[in-house]
Image 1 (cartoon, one colour):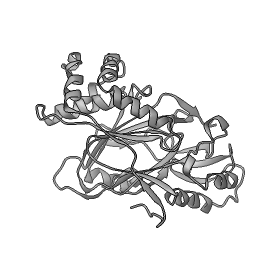
Image 2: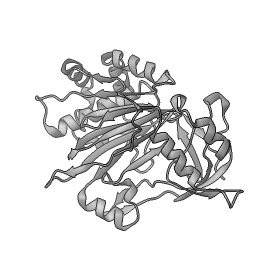
Image 3: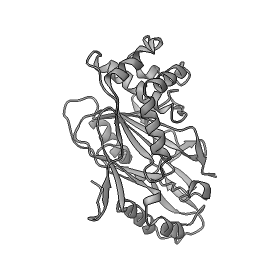
Image 4: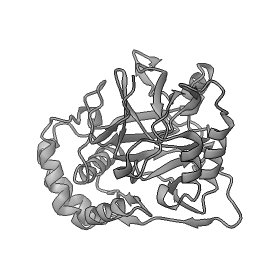
Length: 330
């Protein structure tokens, strides 16, 4: 679990509900999707997704307004939405329509990126006990649910370039842990030590980072098709965006300063976890989170006590904004 300060102000952001009437109304408006239900892998970015966006905009208008308001607020910039489940649908049908609901609400807030490997408007992450052991054996334990994931911001890699998406949206299809823990968030506007670390690390100064990998299963094997090391600034030189922090993976060193003290990075991470204000959202099945990636850093607790004899210990999808900030990687 995250180490908290005794005097730390712990808060929960808004967690919105959806109603069964809204859920059924949304489904009823999208009869053209009946031929691909319940296969979420057939949801394509170019598969008439405009109709789903329009339907969600009408049905979930109140929730979308609240999401936009939260993301615009520098002191929050995060919100969660719980997607109701119908007892009139099978488990796989509910899984499909839960993903469709999350994506369609999200597409009313930002333009969804496309997974280049699967051509879907999301990336699906599946974790199992066996896969977690394989990830650990390959030195990729940081992407396994049983590993603590410290405070970071998200990036996208395209060839030799790295960028920060403006917004991110993770959604839990299923969580099979008795103690799934929380998703934590620190808005940069409420991080008291930000200016201190900007001075110590530098604005626009490039660092070498070993990035947290994206892992795909290809023909039964786990593969990570992206570079493992990038060179990027930690604090972006953008006054208009309030100098956002990019931190994803492990910092290996400074580009032009071989004597840079890496303990400063650990101090930065510790400072974030000890921030005066910390938002926490309990992790649960069918809960989506929307956050402005430029306005805060996030972390999650270790997922503890997996439920035995299940195919997946965790299944979640993630999509990010096509609107990005280029980090000018060389």
